[in-house]
Image (cartoon, rainbow, N blue to C red; front, side, top):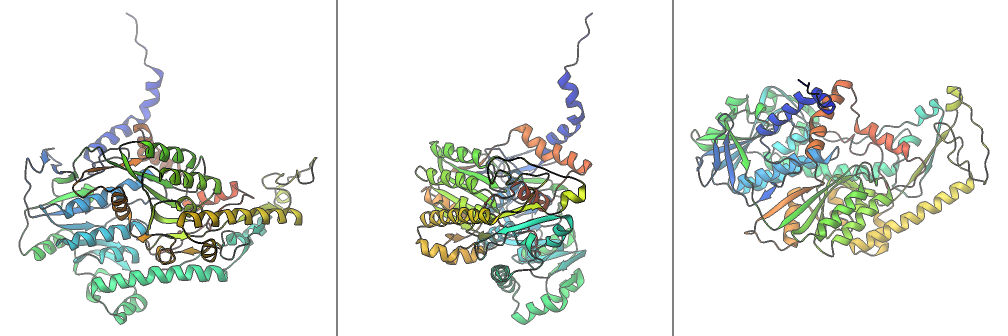
Length: 605
């Protein structure tokens, strides 16, 4: 009898089969009803209730659920943010649409916001706050649970009717700080020379390598940013908790660090405990025990431990609003990958079923060419369908360049935007090779042929003639940037020039100056697109997300790569990734923000 041979590729799959099994189990139990490339991110669909123990359940019009229920949003691991990778950001859109669906669900009387283990950027937290405010405006209630909270997370939960705090938790009510790291002295010790090629007042991207403290330009523009977001957060907390200025300032400046008991005494929270305290708060608000609870999110962290999951059912419609994620540095083939994104947007605009496009941009800039690829694709798409840009945490410099031709730009108050300008830097060998025992020698044909030649870094600094040519190149590209902004925003060139020079703004400042159209979050951008597409409220529409990930890509990104990188210690911080990108672009003129933008704006929990 002939022996059967095991296919060689099956052997390769053996090490990852347990992870694959985990993926399928997670996918079947995950309370998110749609993965990244699912078509089920929908509007105007039927609510589904499903028992996680028995698997029973169905559409609400077949099996009406009790009408006195609360929905628990268990947010552990749900808010990884937009910047790192777009497949993670889908959870935020899912949460927003679940809140919106619960707002109109007659069976849901309130929401329990379980923030244990939840971390997100300021824009995401603000978007959730807007959604909860809309939910409350419909006459429903919100109860928030916190264990350890920073200032921004407290801004979110302050929108709740009641705040319950874990007995062992802590609140750090510290406000905001902006800072930068400076590496000039480090580079000098290493033997690395740096030349800043800067000709615009506020374009400070290279100051991390050429200074040891904040410049006056940074103090002015970043101070204005802090004033805007701190003023908004202060106003929001005071109104939600009925505090006056003196009480807010005392809580912020005199005490600032609170145990659960101190927080209750000072009025930061309304109750102490975990599950029982939350359920008791629900019963106090409702005046009696309710019929039950539903859970959306990470059921393992659920406070209510109820057996029913809350899902949003699938619907089908011939009308689609395409949601395109554009995250990371503006680069043609890496990071944001605008070469493929530009083609995708043009393809979507040509499809009959696509009625509008929303582009979610989260980028500090990078390559001007790459940013222009995306900007031109958005401009071309406008001839066929409305295009709305939703700005994430940062959409500045090249990120703003990519946004400027949209029909509407929606930014959050916390969005870092603007920075209309370009800059370059020149790193060169100033003793590094000597320290390493390396020598170099050249033959050249052409006066500037050795520009950039060397081991590790260019062997020399720029000559005066070369710097002069760089200056002309930078100013030419800057003039082109300003001209395009004026065209895209329908503003006089002189007006744009006054707002440019590389200056950054908050979403608030950008709105006031006309650089963006309105303040709002992801959901507000979707509603804007719907309005521009003239889709009425009674018409169904599907929100599809792009670029789509295949099953294999989703599995590798979500499980395999994370598992392997954690075990092998392969993870990189955003700072290291951004530094690597900048070093690889040595000498290139780029519309890009400082290295640490967004990293040192603290209070992000």
